[in-house]
Length: 72
Figure 1 (cartoon, rainbow, N blue to C red):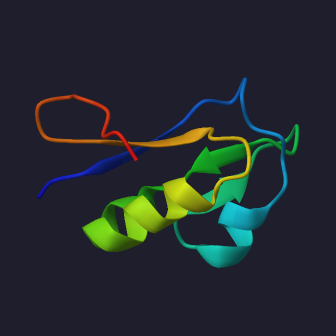
Figure 2: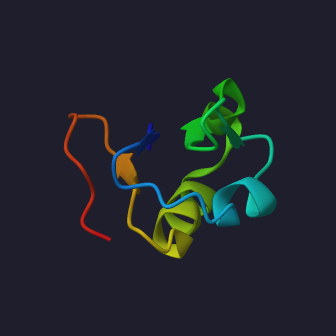
């Protein structure tokens, strides 16, 4: 499907849920705010959607091929 993960650092509450669940896709920057890692592109579509749904602050979004954010 060609999905992409995006993360809004202003919305991130640094719970670490994404990093714990998908350490190849998410990490922390020097300020302990989550970031999307290059490995995120290797996740299948279902895993990307699940990661976004599990984010307690809603900071993770999934964007489709047309650049439109999916309504999760």
